[in-house]
Image 1 (cartoon, rainbow, N blue to C red):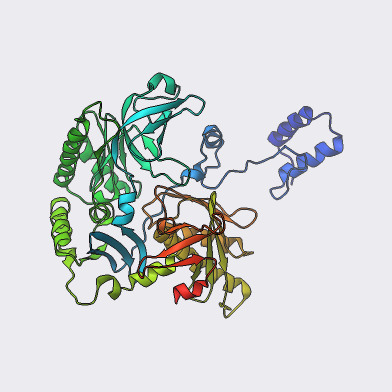
Image 2: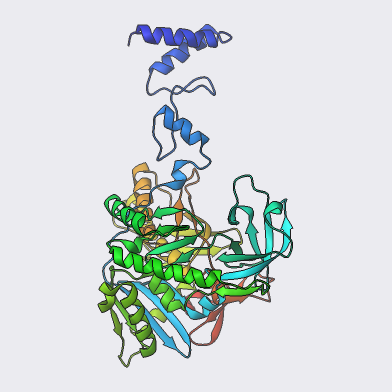
Length: 507
């Protein structure tokens, strides 16, 4: 390959810049730069830029990404939610305890109980009192009626900006309206915010705000339609976030949702000072809450075994989503609802450390204070063709099951997954795509990173409340907290995780 005038001029300048190097090294540098396959020979000097996954190759966008606090791969666009057939919701109520199960086909993917809902304070609004202001932490401890004071950071105070000082915004013993965004966990108190939001069926209303957002899960055409509607009906001094459930919903229904939320805010804002700490607004019962958050046209059926609860939910659905009222049915069979769909057996398995895969492989799920670790094993699966294909098939099964277990167990925080090593880069990428597709079914926000040099997949899932195991367990008193006593919620027995044979629980 011969030199052009431009290339000679370009690399003459490069030679002048590095005149301290021997002529031989300069010559090698020019040759390496002209070869597409060659790597730079001088450390720190690169002829091309390495761009992180999901970014553009252009120089302009590269500079933009460098300046950005969060790289683009950290905010990648969510994949469309895969279609799920025979999606059902089961609601059972007995002795004042409500239980809700969401199924995809025969498989349990999410589980809620009113027992957990009473413990959880997420979404509740309180009139709190500032107890301690910590400028060094840019946070304050606020008493809101819980055993532990909640934590309120300066960025979460209404009216704060980038350079705000918390000691200038709050005073000792000051009363302040706060909302719980994350339950207390372990030694940590609840996370609070002063930026109140009221969730509805289709919208989230944010008082004293100009925020306007539309779910990224919706198609561009639908987002444009909803944007036009919101511009017409948005009340003054309120921000609005449009939820995924608003897809295809009429302007009239959206207006009804907004009006109800505005009325709710009038009640909340009409509090009396001097009563702190005090509960101002409480989230509804778990059944209504789950229906509000999850029920849409993708559900084929909602079965409710309690007549009073059935009437309540039917009335709610008629008011908010009359077009799907027909999906709600009163279950009258003699066989108990959860027994018919084997819900109890599936929950018992969800409390186990080992999870079997259809082909004979298995997962090991271990939780620690800092993160959750998931190990993938082939187990009894030996495959039919090559080792690479066996491992690949096992990993694909594991990806689907891990996504389900994260939802079912409500695992949050940092999660590290050790898939079985694969040499093929193409298969690694296909596995990652499959995993992200399954995670797209999850309404809770997740972030997945590329496979690391050690072959690990690192991800995060928004941690809001205690997970399934944390909700139905307590620390073992015999091993200084290194083990858990898992309560068998169906037979009033207990089993010690790690001390008893796990198979005895599953089978």
